[in-house]
Image (cartoon, rainbow, N blue to C red):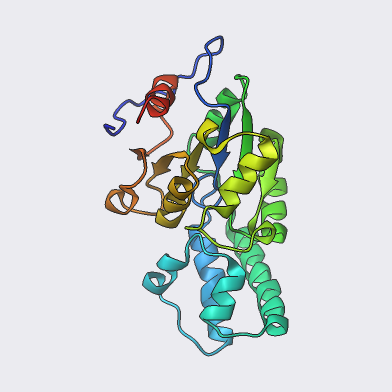
Length: 234
Protein backbone atom coordinates (compact mmCIF):
# COMPACT_ATOMS: atom_id res chain seq x y z
CA UNK A 1 0.00 0.00 0.00
CA UNK A 2 1.05 3.60 -0.46
CA UNK A 3 2.35 5.48 2.55
CA UNK A 4 -0.03 7.99 4.11
CA UNK A 5 0.60 11.59 3.06
CA UNK A 6 -2.50 13.30 4.46
CA UNK A 7 -2.27 15.41 7.60
CA UNK A 8 -5.81 15.22 8.94
CA UNK A 9 -7.25 12.38 11.00
CA UNK A 10 -10.77 11.65 9.81
CA UNK A 11 -12.79 8.70 11.06
CA UNK A 12 -16.46 9.46 10.67
CA UNK A 13 -19.09 7.98 12.96
CA UNK A 14 -22.11 6.46 11.30
CA UNK A 15 -20.02 4.38 8.90
CA UNK A 16 -19.28 0.71 9.51
CA UNK A 17 -15.76 -0.30 10.45
CA UNK A 18 -14.17 -3.06 8.33
CA UNK A 19 -12.57 -4.93 11.25
CA UNK A 20 -14.26 -6.26 14.37
CA UNK A 21 -11.19 -5.68 16.54
CA UNK A 22 -8.20 -3.36 16.77
CA UNK A 23 -5.19 -4.52 18.79
CA UNK A 24 -2.59 -2.00 19.93
CA UNK A 25 0.93 -2.59 21.11
CA UNK A 26 1.93 -0.25 23.97
CA UNK A 27 5.57 0.88 24.08
CA UNK A 28 6.40 3.07 21.10
CA UNK A 29 2.94 2.54 19.64
CA UNK A 30 0.85 4.37 22.24
CA UNK A 31 3.44 5.75 24.65
CA UNK A 32 6.81 7.40 24.06
CA UNK A 33 8.72 5.08 26.37
CA UNK A 34 11.77 4.06 24.38
CA UNK A 35 14.21 6.36 26.15
CA UNK A 36 12.87 5.48 29.60
CA UNK A 37 12.99 1.78 28.84
CA UNK A 38 16.52 2.00 27.45
CA UNK A 39 17.79 3.91 30.47
CA UNK A 40 16.23 1.38 32.84
CA UNK A 41 17.87 -1.50 31.00
CA UNK A 42 21.20 0.34 30.71
CA UNK A 43 21.40 0.89 34.47
CA UNK A 44 20.30 -2.67 35.21
CA UNK A 45 22.95 -4.09 32.87
CA UNK A 46 25.52 -1.89 34.61
CA UNK A 47 24.44 -3.41 37.93
CA UNK A 48 25.61 -6.73 36.50
CA UNK A 49 28.85 -5.25 35.13
CA UNK A 50 27.63 -5.25 31.53
CA UNK A 51 27.48 -2.35 29.11
CA UNK A 52 24.35 -1.80 27.03
CA UNK A 53 24.56 0.66 24.16
CA UNK A 54 21.42 1.86 22.42
CA UNK A 55 22.45 -0.19 19.39
CA UNK A 56 22.57 -3.27 21.62
CA UNK A 57 19.24 -2.37 23.19
CA UNK A 58 17.43 -1.88 19.89
CA UNK A 59 16.96 -5.61 19.10
CA UNK A 60 15.50 -6.12 22.58
CA UNK A 61 12.45 -3.96 21.79
CA UNK A 62 9.36 -6.17 21.90
CA UNK A 63 11.16 -8.99 23.70
CA UNK A 64 9.80 -10.25 27.03
CA UNK A 65 11.80 -8.88 29.95
CA UNK A 66 12.23 -12.35 31.45
CA UNK A 67 13.84 -13.51 28.22
CA UNK A 68 16.20 -10.52 28.23
CA UNK A 69 17.51 -11.13 31.74
CA UNK A 70 17.78 -14.88 31.28
CA UNK A 71 19.55 -14.80 27.92
CA UNK A 72 21.57 -11.59 28.06
CA UNK A 73 22.34 -11.41 31.77
CA UNK A 74 22.20 -15.19 32.21
CA UNK A 75 20.28 -14.99 35.48
CA UNK A 76 18.52 -17.87 37.15
CA UNK A 77 14.82 -17.61 37.92
CA UNK A 78 15.21 -16.23 41.45
CA UNK A 79 17.77 -13.61 40.46
CA UNK A 80 15.74 -12.71 37.36
CA UNK A 81 12.74 -11.81 39.52
CA UNK A 82 14.91 -9.50 41.62
CA UNK A 83 16.44 -7.93 38.53
CA UNK A 84 13.09 -7.24 36.89
CA UNK A 85 11.76 -5.66 40.07
CA UNK A 86 14.79 -3.37 40.07
CA UNK A 87 14.39 -2.61 36.38
CA UNK A 88 10.81 -1.45 36.95
CA UNK A 89 12.06 0.85 39.72
CA UNK A 90 14.56 2.39 37.33
CA UNK A 91 11.81 2.84 34.74
CA UNK A 92 9.51 4.46 37.30
CA UNK A 93 12.24 6.80 38.49
CA UNK A 94 12.94 7.95 34.96
CA UNK A 95 9.34 8.73 34.05
CA UNK A 96 8.59 10.38 37.39
CA UNK A 97 11.65 12.59 36.92
CA UNK A 98 11.20 13.24 33.21
CA UNK A 99 7.53 12.52 32.53
CA UNK A 100 6.04 10.29 29.87
CA UNK A 101 3.81 11.15 26.94
CA UNK A 102 1.48 9.37 24.60
CA UNK A 103 2.47 9.18 20.93
CA UNK A 104 1.08 12.25 19.09
CA UNK A 105 -2.53 11.79 17.92
CA UNK A 106 -2.75 8.36 19.59
CA UNK A 107 -5.44 9.49 22.03
CA UNK A 108 -7.43 11.10 19.25
CA UNK A 109 -7.28 7.85 17.29
CA UNK A 110 -8.43 5.84 20.32
CA UNK A 111 -11.30 8.25 20.94
CA UNK A 112 -12.49 8.11 17.35
CA UNK A 113 -12.21 4.34 17.12
CA UNK A 114 -14.50 4.13 20.16
CA UNK A 115 -17.26 5.59 17.98
CA UNK A 116 -17.49 2.30 16.11
CA UNK A 117 -19.04 -1.01 16.96
CA UNK A 118 -15.73 -2.80 17.46
CA UNK A 119 -13.57 -4.20 20.25
CA UNK A 120 -10.16 -2.91 21.25
CA UNK A 121 -7.30 -4.67 22.99
CA UNK A 122 -3.88 -3.77 24.30
CA UNK A 123 -1.35 -6.52 23.65
CA UNK A 124 2.19 -5.90 24.87
CA UNK A 125 5.28 -7.88 25.81
CA UNK A 126 5.75 -5.67 28.86
CA UNK A 127 5.18 -7.16 32.30
CA UNK A 128 1.89 -6.68 34.16
CA UNK A 129 3.38 -4.36 36.80
CA UNK A 130 4.69 -1.94 34.19
CA UNK A 131 1.52 -2.08 32.08
CA UNK A 132 -0.70 -1.39 35.07
CA UNK A 133 1.42 1.60 36.10
CA UNK A 134 1.46 3.13 32.62
CA UNK A 135 -2.26 2.64 32.01
CA UNK A 136 -3.12 4.29 35.32
CA UNK A 137 -0.64 7.13 34.87
CA UNK A 138 -1.86 8.04 31.39
CA UNK A 139 -5.51 7.02 31.95
CA UNK A 140 -5.52 4.66 28.96
CA UNK A 141 -7.29 1.61 30.36
CA UNK A 142 -10.75 3.01 29.60
CA UNK A 143 -10.14 2.60 25.88
CA UNK A 144 -9.60 -1.17 25.95
CA UNK A 145 -11.95 -4.10 26.38
CA UNK A 146 -9.09 -6.38 27.41
CA UNK A 147 -5.37 -6.10 28.18
CA UNK A 148 -2.84 -8.86 27.48
CA UNK A 149 0.76 -8.56 28.65
CA UNK A 150 3.98 -10.53 28.58
CA UNK A 151 3.14 -12.35 31.80
CA UNK A 152 0.22 -14.02 30.04
CA UNK A 153 2.21 -15.81 27.32
CA UNK A 154 5.26 -18.05 27.15
CA UNK A 155 6.79 -16.80 23.92
CA UNK A 156 7.90 -13.30 22.96
CA UNK A 157 7.25 -11.51 19.71
CA UNK A 158 7.83 -12.35 16.85
CA UNK A 159 5.87 -15.36 18.08
CA UNK A 160 2.16 -14.55 17.60
CA UNK A 161 1.07 -15.64 21.08
CA UNK A 162 0.20 -12.25 22.60
CA UNK A 163 -1.93 -11.24 19.60
CA UNK A 164 -3.65 -14.61 19.32
CA UNK A 165 -4.50 -14.50 23.01
CA UNK A 166 -5.89 -10.98 22.59
CA UNK A 167 -8.12 -12.13 19.73
CA UNK A 168 -9.25 -15.12 21.77
CA UNK A 169 -10.17 -12.91 24.71
CA UNK A 170 -12.04 -10.56 22.38
CA UNK A 171 -13.84 -13.65 21.00
CA UNK A 172 -12.71 -12.79 17.48
CA UNK A 173 -10.91 -14.63 14.71
CA UNK A 174 -7.41 -13.40 13.79
CA UNK A 175 -8.61 -12.31 10.35
CA UNK A 176 -11.18 -10.05 12.03
CA UNK A 177 -8.43 -8.05 13.78
CA UNK A 178 -5.93 -5.40 12.74
CA UNK A 179 -2.78 -4.80 14.78
CA UNK A 180 -1.05 -1.44 15.27
CA UNK A 181 2.66 -1.80 16.06
CA UNK A 182 5.93 0.11 16.05
CA UNK A 183 8.56 -2.65 16.20
CA UNK A 184 9.79 -5.08 13.58
CA UNK A 185 9.30 -8.04 15.91
CA UNK A 186 5.74 -6.89 16.60
CA UNK A 187 4.94 -6.59 12.92
CA UNK A 188 6.28 -10.11 12.39
CA UNK A 189 4.17 -11.35 15.31
CA UNK A 190 1.03 -9.78 13.83
CA UNK A 191 1.66 -11.38 10.45
CA UNK A 192 2.44 -14.72 12.12
CA UNK A 193 -0.94 -14.40 13.84
CA UNK A 194 -2.69 -14.01 10.47
CA UNK A 195 -3.66 -10.39 11.13
CA UNK A 196 -3.36 -7.23 9.08
CA UNK A 197 -0.84 -4.79 10.53
CA UNK A 198 -0.26 -1.04 10.53
CA UNK A 199 3.26 0.01 11.56
CA UNK A 200 4.18 3.47 12.82
CA UNK A 201 7.76 4.72 12.52
CA UNK A 202 8.19 5.93 16.10
CA UNK A 203 11.08 3.58 16.92
CA UNK A 204 11.99 1.71 13.73
CA UNK A 205 12.82 2.98 10.25
CA UNK A 206 10.53 2.18 7.37
CA UNK A 207 12.74 -0.47 5.84
CA UNK A 208 12.58 -2.51 9.06
CA UNK A 209 8.78 -2.32 9.02
CA UNK A 210 8.34 -3.32 5.40
CA UNK A 211 6.45 -6.51 6.28
CA UNK A 212 3.54 -4.42 7.61
CA UNK A 213 0.52 -3.94 5.36
CA UNK A 214 0.72 -0.18 5.87
CA UNK A 215 3.53 2.02 7.22
CA UNK A 216 2.77 5.46 8.63
CA UNK A 217 4.88 8.23 10.15
CA UNK A 218 2.03 9.60 12.27
CA UNK A 219 -1.53 8.78 13.28
CA UNK A 220 -2.44 12.16 11.84
CA UNK A 221 -4.11 11.36 8.54
CA UNK A 222 -5.13 7.80 9.36
CA UNK A 223 -8.75 7.46 8.26
CA UNK A 224 -11.50 4.95 7.67
CA UNK A 225 -10.56 4.44 4.04
CA UNK A 226 -7.12 3.19 5.03
CA UNK A 227 -8.70 0.50 7.23
CA UNK A 228 -11.09 -0.44 4.43
CA UNK A 229 -8.18 -0.80 2.01
CA UNK A 230 -6.35 -2.99 4.52
CA UNK A 231 -9.34 -5.27 4.88
CA UNK A 232 -9.57 -5.67 1.12
CA UNK A 233 -5.93 -6.72 0.71
CA UNK A 234 -5.40 -10.32 -0.44
